[in-house]
Length: 258
Length: 250
Image 1 (tube, one colour):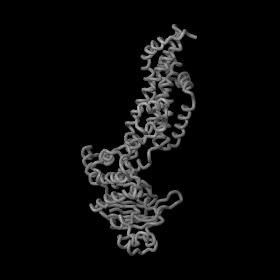
Image 2 (cartoon, one colour; image 1 turned 180 degrees about the vertical axis):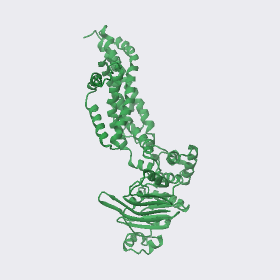
Image 3 (cartoon, rainbow over the protein chains, first blue to last red; image 1 turned 45 degrees about the vertical axis):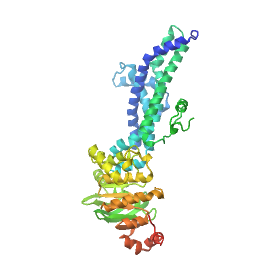
Image 4 (cartoon, rainbow over the protein chains, first blue to last red; image 1 turned 90 degrees about the vertical axis):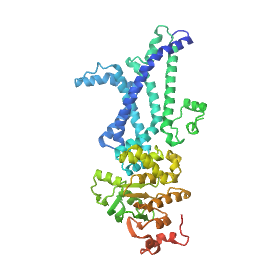
């Protein structure tokens, strides 16, 4: 397939893809924001062991973690309007983007709920007791003491999720959303330089991921400044290891690496 | 005045407290002694409802909580009237020493930040940590963390401060600095209930000693009596190790 490889096309397409970074990032940002809300809502019944809701949230998390996102996209995009038609609600006129964001939001929410649950459980029980002992209510103890610490613990999990979602947005083009991947498929239709287009696409995703990773590393350091170099690396990406080595960042960050 | 009447607590089938009565006068320092598993820490934790008693009554002055059917509001009020110093310090890990002391003042007592800061700095100076205001707990030694914990408790200006084995988790070298601070505030007439294994310290700082075993108060009285002429054989046995001539000193 296609024409003879020409590096010039890679640069050319790279530049042409850049405007579509915006739409991909919008999907990521909106769906993560939505995911955080869904995730928190799903995590609370399990943290506080609320009888029926706890089961429902478990079901929700298992479903969205256990089925491919492509199927979820199809199910919601083609299935949901049909179901809602039965109760005379017409959503077929909603923009595709709304469906896409909803699906990615639900999908990432499932992961967020697991992450929140893990992070909150990881905060020492003594922190809550101390909060109660100074006279805080359960709500204050959660928002002032537990949540900020859980947030810091969950940053690496969140980072993984955001990057995974960014890559997953490449499936949105299957519903016809003109984002990065969709564009990369249409760019070479005349020139037939497909390989160059995919190469440029890979470069865009890679640079975005790298930037996000740096951003989260920074956030992690800020949020965990109180833990004073005792941060546990919960994941070691090859890229990160390499970056760490090059930058020679403080000992704790390269733990398990180099 | 703090009054406990018939405090009982079971974990499942195990009865940990079998009806404890205790009266603590204002300004009194009470030390609770006893072997491990005697229920002394549980009793202390019942006083501010970190542990829910199954029965009994807790009263502070004319405010009282019926433990059979406590109102949420009453539990909250009880906690505001008490403060606790934990064995594991339990400082808020994401807050500096000063913020730890300020937290209760700002969030619970709704004091303006500047005032809370002033009180916090003052109290940290009192416990000898004027130079550590901005240090995070992870940057402090155990003894320093516990002193922040004491300052945090003092800041709330409670009716009583509950000490749960405040020196048990410390290196022997650091015990002294914490005990010195507790002794200092005891002299100021703050009501305190201390669960401790530091016999010498208890004898020295407390006005009243309570000896517990098996979920019951075996004997109580002034330190002189308890340490030198206990009535109960069990008390004598327990204290024998400490009252021998190699007097325990700190």
